[in-house]
Amino acid sequence: MRRAVGALLRKELRLELRAPQSVPAMALFSVTTLVLFHFALQRGEVDGDLAAGVLCVTLLFAAMLGVSRLFVADREEGGLDGFLLAPVDRTALLVAKAVALGAFLVAVECVLVPAFVFLLLGPALDAAAFARLALVLLLVDAGVAVVGTLVGAIAVQTRARDLLVPLLALPLLMPVVIALAKATTPLFLAAGAGSLPVRWLGILALYDLVFGLLAYGLFDFLVED
Amino acid sequence: MLYGKRLRGLSIAAFVTLTAGIALAFFYAPMDADQGFMQKIFYVHVPLAMVALGGFVFGGAMAIQHLRTRDPRYDLRSYVAIHLSLILGAGVLITGSIWARASWGHWWVWDEPTLVSFLIVFLLYATYQPLRFSIDDPEKQARYASVFAITAGAFVPLNFLAVRLAQAYTHPRVFATANGGLPARMQVAFYVMLVGMALLYATLWKYEMASKSTSWQLRRLRAKLAGEESAAPRGRSAAPSLPTTT
Image (tube, rainbow over all chains, first blue to last red):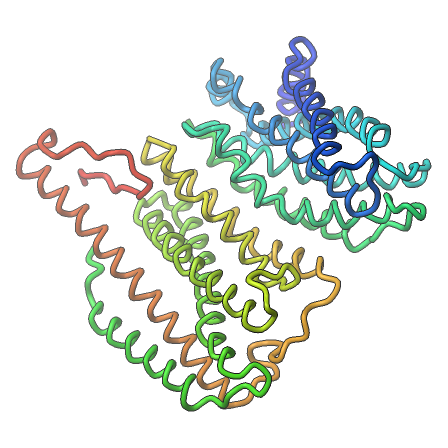
């Protein structure tokens, strides 16, 4: 199992490194969205709940791009068939894909967060607030990665592929949106970063756990043929 | 399998209970001191919502059975349950909106967590039909729809928790919970309406099951009589299909 996950993950990351596709597109899209927010909101800088909302929506929409590409290459180039022929647990694919998507999201955030702070955020972020933001984003990434893998695996088998991804994933990610917005609002306050609401970290962890177990239980049915 | 059995009895029971419930709600239950006549919508709105959510959960349970047994009949049960719950869900949103307008003066209020959660759940389940429709292979369609139904079923409680916690305060409500501060006579009317709605749901579910399985049987008989080729090709559909040859 571990070797299978390792091999699949290496393949996933090598593919992205040799022919970068998802990550650059997601990163570019997220920066463009920030500019879009600047003009749509007609604000030079944002703080508090507005800042949390901008970051949240930008991250989620960028994630949708990654989710809809996640299984496309495997399906079109026959990678999925090859995987199904190999005598390994199918959960390995779920774990590898989720970890890869999580890594993509972290890479995108490495561009998105500095760009957000630089372009739009009013109050400065100190190191402590930055660390707290990173913690929240990691929990969010885990949830988005798991749900995204599940939704991506469903959508890739349909004719409406890219159409279905946001329709399925965004309602499912609504608790993540709520928690992300609530948890990051105190970090972006104009009066200085407040403490992190622990309750929302708990909700995020619970969400990750529930959907992790669900994906573990259901993924086998999605890669049968 | 025949689903038409006991359909008449069930229909009559649903009709009688619903009529009794409405009569009780209007003539027996006391007028709400605060909201007056508008509060009567509570006897429709809340049972409707509870039955719709129950239907989603039932659909999820049938989907689990489908994945375990691979029997397409379970997929049909799950499909009909979710499809009916969606129709009821539209009713919930409309009655909820009317009630919000009457008691708070707005057609939609965001700090009413139950209604907001219901909207999210409704939006999620609204993709159930498009998802089915865009998968051609019937077996795969059934399998993927089941995975969706289970995921969405598990999502419902989590979503309610998150939305409820997100409200700093909730509107002061005259009836905090359905069975909490409700006078006994209101409770009677409410429970009769709840049972009536559940019976209505069961009746509609059985009707659709009967209709769907009858048309399957018809197709099978046609295929048997005139040969496999004579049956009209089944067009693309979101509805599940049973194999014509068994």
